[in-house]
Length: 438
Image (tube, helix red, strand yellow):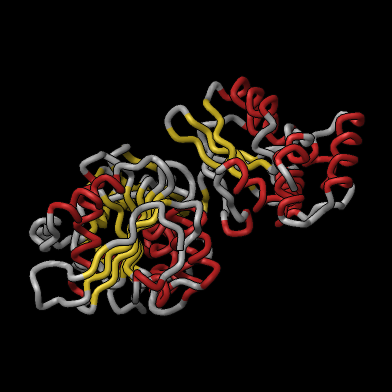
């Protein structure tokens, strides 16, 4: 198509389709004229008439407008707790799906990111600055229809534990582990089992204060209390090679003995990037990358596994200085990283580890660190993490088998560190520059 013919089309999507030899110039002109006459955007009209498939439309739209492309199937649940149910419903009615609220910005999934009227309405509804993320139209429609049938969430506390048989240690352990895992994901440092006279309550303590997890009948609470009476510690997920250990403390209260399960930690002296042997150019490149506001993925690999983990911790430590919400999935946990909620991945069962990943993402982390994802996560779990990392403000730190051969979404900024010789005091090979396409 020559420049004069191209200028006859006002739709960038149609120009891209003609250049890609998907439709003829004559068909493009007819489509544009018909869409304008019917009052539709070219994008919506072509999808309605089944003359454009959703994956192709999404890819061309993202490339044309330099907008992130997201696979909704890999996204999981949105994290928009700051929005009211009414605001979310209003956004859905505009044919958009809110994905995340961060500071004064809201990321929304849309099939057409150039629909400025819809973006303005979303900004008016939320009082936030909308940021469009391109998704496939058919997947968006399915997700919006599903949202219409999801009942409103309830904040009511569960009343459980009546089915714990007396003196059944295994049942009491399973019950307690369920809530310890949730408390750990929530960033809690302690879980309290508290007698109330006629019942028991289970509460967690974090930097945000005490949170009620569950209320138990008196008999069930006593079963758990008796189980903990002579235990100096309690292991979360005892089938894993590296369980999370909670010290069990006993405190006398008005209604009886209160049990406090406090996570046992090992302090780790974190290395700096300088101490790991990175030179000034490499350090400046890494720090510049970490300060980006776009979605970021940083992959680290090394022949020496310990060196790989130390590098991940050093990068996470750099981010911790920015007071961000950091989560890590590790196996085993090498030590305590200040400001980070660290979770042990469960054996080699990818379904359990995928569930842990989902729980982490539901906590709206800024930074997520995963060591050996190819070993512990399923392909779907890995795709979910990569999709999350493409959204603004997110950073995914990965310890992988070979960083330089690992492929990532092109819409994310990437940094790859590959340490080939652990006997030297510096990385031998570093970096494909941030944002570089594979």
